[in-house]
Length: 332
Image 1 (tube, rainbow, N blue to C red):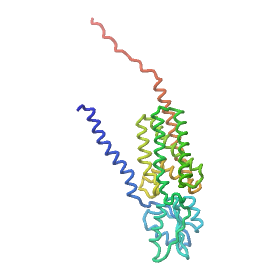
Image 2: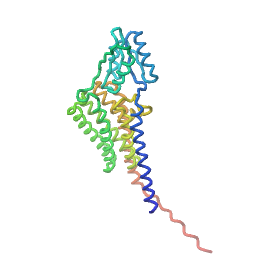
Image 3: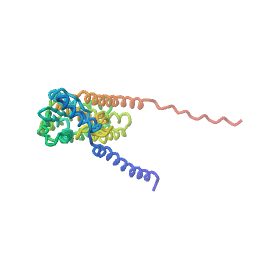
Image 4: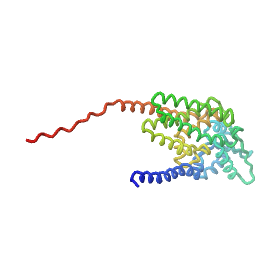
């Protein structure tokens, strides 16, 4: 066997286990280490009763980031503004837990269990849903399942733009058009047909389209700068890392660090957060996600345009003049 095929065989045999190990790390590690880490929760009520509840929550070292509120109304406002995931209201009438399954059904269940475990024996805990999930998706599973298809749509757009030879302004226009159509189509399916989203229709379409544009522009931009390997790098970053680190099925604060933070810096995580905001919270706390997605889209489109110009200059540059070796001097 010649050396070249042997090297390719070894490369394939080594590469596949490496990719499998990376995929297992990206998907299984966050799932196996799911736990609250500085999870924002609120406590409201009279000082003495609220202090007792806060002490109970802070016994779990590093699990909860407790915010104090004067009363239940202030705690509700904080939940609706996505400042906290839920709040415990303590008072003479007993304990009331305010939750927002729309922010994360997993966190809502976690708070139910934590507060019930810390309540006095036999004391009932009233649970009130401040922001509920729509009837079409009562467990929030459909929204979580939408992260991967939207990410794949962006990767496909970036890859097809690259592989079909589109460059410069045409590539950028194609990415913008594809993202717009995907956003409209996804909103029609998720909102109008399935009923898993119940916010402003156009805002949801914009959030979905912006997410696709951010992913697609990043993939196409990497390909414009690095060549075809940039498509693989972009897909690896957006799907293999961005999808499991998005925290769509749980919450970023439940993922081990730095997965939770990194996931919100990548388009899948930022897109999930933006979609929750516009679908269930009237667009509150959407600014950070919009900024993240816009930066990815702008940088990716800039790379597409710059990469095209650099390649054009390289192709038009005259080849270096060859300098023939001087003829040897005649013998004396």
